[in-house]
Image 1 (cartoon, helix red, strand yellow):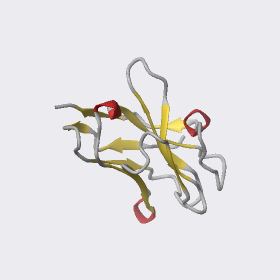
Image 2: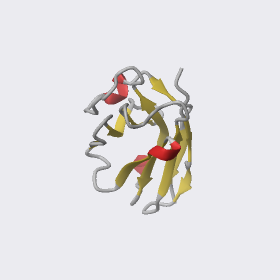
Image 3: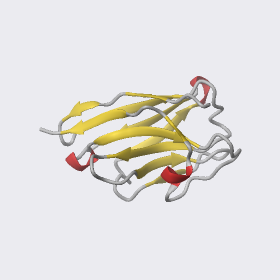
Image 4: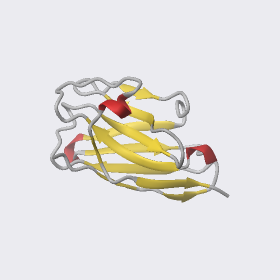
Length: 128
């Protein structure tokens, strides 16, 4: 079982920034695709951003492209999501997710339903 622990959520005003962290102590981030999805009450899960295994190529949903940046700290097995210019519609629980069984896994639209391991989530609320 892969352990993923998210942190960094909170309450922020529109236009503000937050950085989410996902600690993955037993996962070699070089090898596996890993990313973030979010889910708001009454809405379907939405894949936000993802980094592929092996080459670190990044995927972003259209709703966050240009505002969010995904990155890895491989030495500390931690994934980050820098979120800038936040909007009320970004309000959701954000989950870190990975497919720990496919070496060199790729990120693509719909990854949020393909990745079978995720953490407990961290709440992000954008409100004035």
